[in-house]
Image (cartoon, rainbow, N blue to C red; front, side, top):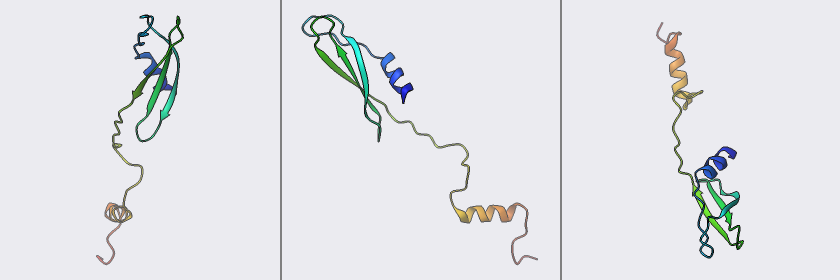
Length: 93
């Protein structure tokens, strides 16, 4: 999660203070939600008038299925695969 915070903060563009018309300075970032989609709030302060502003970063999930599972999903398919791999099927002798 720290990597997500760091990468999100690096890609931010600081807002402009509506009163002073200068770039605000980053103050802190905090996690708003982790599930179902991560959201991070970034807080900024104006160095002149101390006005606060917030921008949010929402991550879009890109879940991919693994290429090979460590265990079979169904017990029946595991039994069938192990039977055909080396031992003769029961009753085929």
